[in-house]
Length: 407
Ligand SMILES: *[C@@H]1O[C@H](CO)[C@@H](O)[C@H](O)[C@H]1NC(C)=O
Ligand SMILES: *[C@@H]1O[C@H](CO)[C@@H](O)[C@H](O)[C@H]1NC(C)=O
Ligand SMILES: *[C@@H]1O[C@H](CO)[C@@H](O)[C@H](O)[C@H]1NC(C)=O
Image (cartoon, rainbow, N blue to C red; front, side):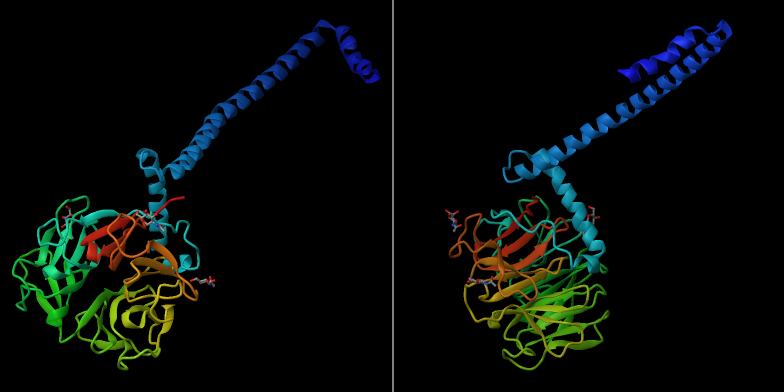
């Protein structure tokens, strides 16, 4: 109360001031008011600018939250594309800087359990909408699938969203060993530099290069090899597994400098041996991952190593989570996670180096079958840039796409 009275005192004294004083006071007052208006103005501007941003931000997070929730249900397509784009970006970032991200855990590591058939799925046959035991798959820069359609002795290119494929190697001429024929091709990879594909022409015991434009005749680049799988490293060196010599060899550019890089110690289950080496994968550090099929394990051979490390399986033939049953294919993602086609278990299983058990990624639902959530003797594997997984579902004569869950 006292303070209030004291506070009102100057006002009374002000009223007794001269008119000149009053006018200066008025100016001062106006200046103060001006200042006040300026402050109010600034605050208003700040509010006007910030409120919509906050609203937009809240809306955005709501949308993202909503879209992650709705990815499971196929109804809301529009919103889910938003999150897909986010993941695309993140995946691409990791591609650009793989060494730093290998230690990091992937943000998303689940795939939808129901696969979408993107090629074949129309029974066994040699029509352009059919496949006959697809074994190897690759994806080129145009998002086209290159499929080693093994029993049709052809490589078929399946453009994204297409209902039929196009024969780009072998085919029509039946199995044969002419330079324009294939016999049981089991693997195919892209040779970007030469605008070509490299094929494991298995029963012809050769590795071939077929050019994408048909004017250049196909060529045998490696002869006398029982090719189980082909891969390239970041320097475009070619790696080929040989299931008769139980080894993997590397050919540097030009295919002249040939080096034994894994195995070569006969058939067996020691750490420097293989029993039926199939598909292979080479990572950024030149480590070679080999599907050591009849040993039911995946071996990793680091650069210049004299023996491999078991990175998956190796606990005999079986269906437990620490076992594999004929590991037909292996690929490794940007985070160093190892994805394996566990053939007889009809599943794709993922291992992390050093783990005792794997984690089932897709399939593995009882025995093999032809439902969207089932696989029937899975073979080749591939990822696209968005992290979706593709599986050559060999005995269902189809290629399955498993979309990455972004939640
Ligand atoms: C990719 O698509 C472009 C444009 O259609 C085409 O010119 C190119 O030849 C294609 N590349 C391959 C490898 O098919
Ligand atoms: C591995 O899986 C088996 C079941 O197959 C389970 O009994 C065991 O506890 C698991 N071990 C680890 C370390 O998770
Ligand atoms: C396996 O798939 C069938 C057919 O879709 C389904 O009815 C069943 O519940 C699934 N079982 C398991 C264990 O996921």
